Image (tube, helix red, strand yellow):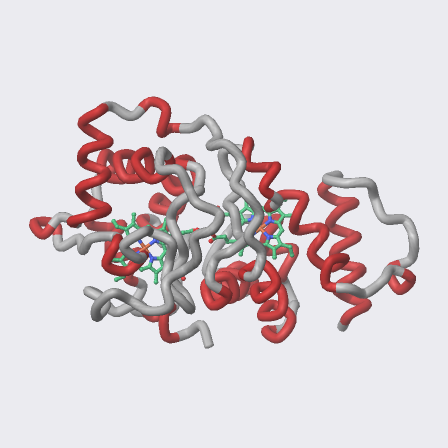
Length: 238
Ligand code: HEC
Ligand code: HEC
C-alpha cells in the first residue's frame, strides 16, 4: 500500500506539473508522512492562498477532513484532481492524512481578491445577520449555532468558516444546491443551502471572507447548545 501511495503521489505531481517531477523510482523515496503529503501542499499550502479557490485545510477538525477525503473518494464531492489524489486509498490512510493536517496551524496569508470585494453595505449587513442570527422566516438557523460563536468550527466534524476565499464558499453553496456536494444523511448544509437565495449566499460569503482569521484560534471542544438541525456528518466522522 505504501509503495502504491508513493507512486500515486509522484504520478500526480508529474501529471499536474505542479512541482519538480520526482524521477526516482517510487520505492526509493523516503516513506515519511511529509513525503506523502508533499503533493497536497502544491495546492493547499498557505502561500497558495493568493488563489481565489483552493481551500485552507490546515487546522480544520480531523473528523471533518476525514469525511471530506472519503467524500471525494466515494463520489459525494467532485473535483477531478482531488478525487484522483484519494481514489483507492483506504480509510486508515485518509485518517492519517486528516490527523496530520488538523494538527497544522501555519499563519494565514492575506485574503485573496474575490467576489467579496464587490459586496455592497446592504449585503454585508445581511451576511452578518445570517451568520449571527440566521433567518427564522426561511428556517435558516444561525451559522454560529453549529460553527461556533467565533466561527472556528467544533470538534470533531464541523469546520471553521474564516480564512476561506469567498469564491470557494459560493461554489460550495452552489454544489449543495445542485446536489453535487453531499454528506452523510441528513445533509444539513444541503438543506440550509436550499433555503438561501443567491443574494443571501453572496452576502454571507462576502462577510465571512472579510473577517480576519486568527491562526491561534482552535475548533471549540463542543457545540454551545444542541444542534438546531441534525447533521449526518457529525455522526459519521468516527
Ligand atoms: C491540484 C490541486 C490540488 C491538490 C494536488 C490537492 N487538492 Fe485538495 N482540494 C483542491 C481543491 C480545488 C479543493 C476544493 C474542491 C471543491 O470545489 O470542492 C480541494 C479540497 C480539499 C479538501 C476539502 C476542504 C474543505 O474545506 O472542505 C480536503 C480535505 C483536501 N482537498 C485535501 C487534500 C489532500 C490531503 C491532498 C493530497 C493527498 C490534496 N487535497 C491535494 C485542490 C487540490
Ligand atoms: C445544524 C448545524 C449547522 C448549521 C446551522 C450550519 N452549518 Fe455549515 N456545516 C455544518 C456541518 C456538519 C458541515 C460539514 C458538512 C460536511 O461534512 O460536508 C458544515 C460545513 C460548512 C461549510 C463547508 C466549509 C468548507 O471548508 O468546505 C460551509 C462553507 C458552511 N458550513 C457554511 C455555513 C453557513 C454560512 C451557515 C449559516 C447560514 C452554516 N454553515 C450553518 C453544520 C452546520
